[in-house]
Image 1 (cartoon, rainbow, N blue to C red):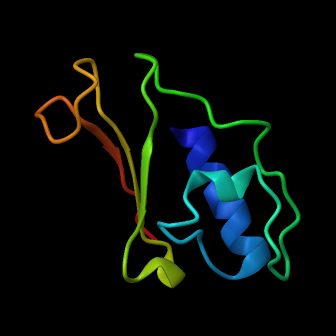
Image 2 (cartoon, helix red, strand yellow):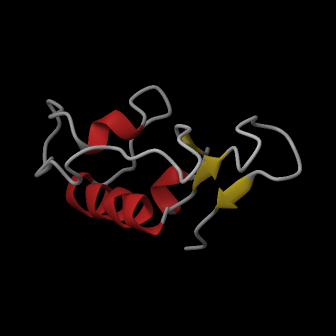
Length: 90
């Protein structure tokens, strides 16, 4: 999760914003017609250690560095107590 978060930060530094929720993590590997996009920031988006995809959400104050990156955890189901959330603080 830290590698993805670092790539999100690099994207944000280059473009002046984080990917939208709709753009998702694909914005880190797929070129966007966006000024300052100097990626790819990752070769590919890896799954979590249980083989599930991460969930990325750009929060309302994303310009200030707020995004949520979540793993469904060992049960591979989002919204359960074992979810793992990475939320950077600006």
